[in-house]
Amino acid sequence: MICTNMIDAIGNTPLVQLRLSHHEGGNVYAKLEMQNPFGMKDRVAKQIILEARRTGQLKEGDPIIESSSGTMACGVAMVGTYLGHDVHIVTDPRIDQITLAKLTAMGSKIYIVDQMGVNGWQSARLNRLYELMEELPGAYWPRQYENPDNPGAYHSLAVEVMNELEHVDILVASVGSGGSMSGTARALKSYNPNLKVIAVDCIGSVIFGQPDKPERLQGGLGNSLVASNVDHALVDEVHWLNDEEAFAATLALAAEQKIFAGNSSGSVYAVAKWVRSNVPQGVNILAIFPDRGDRYVNTIYNERYRIDKQIERLRLPENPQYVPYRTTVASWSYSSLSGVMHRV
Image (cartoon, rainbow, N blue to C red; front, side, top):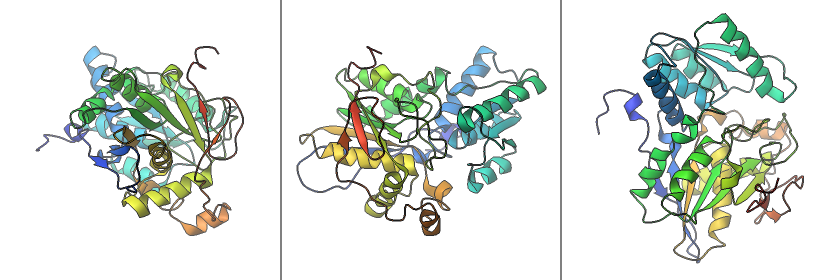
């Protein structure tokens, strides 16, 4: 397929059936969103920016400002600068050098906050973003955490999957801004109202009632705030993995499936494998893999880094522990949310 530009190259990512043991169990299909030009958030950047231009919220030549430390920044930079907008990215010291190089090469202006705010790095970045909005009159802020075009961007992902599979019974997806999980789940439920939705979060993220741990090592999933795009009512079950477990799962994904990915994909992989072993044959499980591994060559894939962080043993339990919702956890655990979010 010939694309007329890089924006048209977003989407239609591969769907790969994972090679797992021959024991009875379901089928796991990985949607390789990492194969977008820069990653999964390319879909969001395309949807939000094109819609903002269509409605007049973003006018020709207006600057764009966004807060991001990863793939959303790259997506906004690619789409925004291609369409002639100056792009300003507010980020924090956790940004990796590869992402920084990509953003700089595309012509983005980068602002790195140097101190955490009251709610971790997220609040510090937002404070700097508000300052920039004052400094750049007419600037457009995509607001990925609350813009409905974020989850709306994943309708196309669901359509792509359903063009390939007869049915999807279970969705396993990581959660950060909430867009990919909520948007994909909502769209897939139009095909299967009984779809089971399993969210994957990290220990130290507040999205599903855990205490905040801003020093957590994982990137790409989890949050120090609960974005309005997270639709808790869609979620049947949530899993949390700690840093060591997520890193172990990510290395296992590369070794076992030859998929070089980040910890969001690794955590989803661990959960999808466990789910698969607990369902009958014929059940189709869709696992969304958002991120490539290039951002993590100096962390997850670096033995010295893992030793320095005292997670070199890379322990990953065979099974997670079930706990009541809002129980504080320290290792791979899961809770049922069915009905819970309607009562709180």
